[in-house]
Length: 200
Image 1 (cartoon, rainbow, N blue to C red):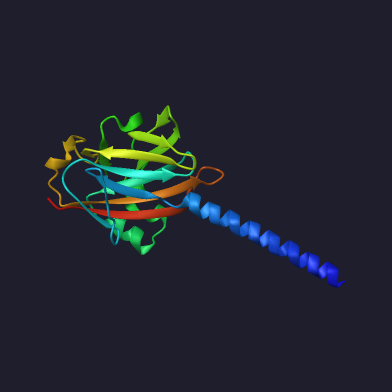
Image 2: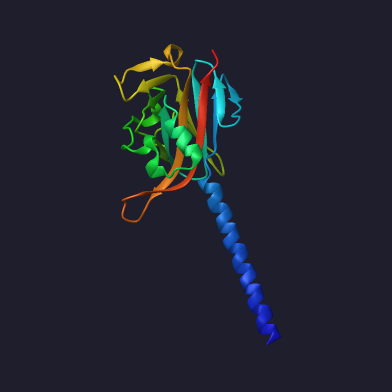
C-alpha cells in the first residue's frame, strides 16, 4: 500500500512539473516583447512612456513563432488609460472597429492613427507579413516596423512626415489575442501600453 501511495505521489509531482513547464512556455509565447529604436539606439521605456525625437523610429517585436499583434495608435489617451485600468478588450475604444487594411512589408514606413481601429501587424512567412524587415534566429523572429510618417485614419487619411506632426504625444496599446471557436469574440492573451512623447 505504501509503495502504491508513493508511486501515485511521484506521478502527480511529475504531472504538475510538466504542467508548470507548459504554462511557463505559454506565458513566454504570449508575452509582448517590444522595444523602440531610434538612431540605431534602443530607447528606454520608463513607466510605459518613451521619449523620442520627431524623426524616424522603429518598433521591434520578438516572436517565438509566426505571430501577430493588434496595435491601436491614437492621439487620444482614452484607450491607453482604460487599458492601464484593466478594462477588457471589447470595452477599449481603440479596438471597436475592424482593423485597418495595410500593404504588405510596410512599404510606406507608416503608422495609422485612429480612435476606433487597430493596426493588424503579423508575420506568417517571408512572403506574407506587415513588417519592414524580419530576421530569423534559432529561437525567435525579430520583426521590425519602421515608422517615418503618421496617417490620421479618422480624418483626411493624408500621410504626414513625423517632423510635421503637431501633437506632443501619441499612445499605443498593443494586444495579443486569438479568436474563440466560433470566431465571434477575441480572447485577449496579453497587452502592452506605451505613451510616446516628442522631446523636440
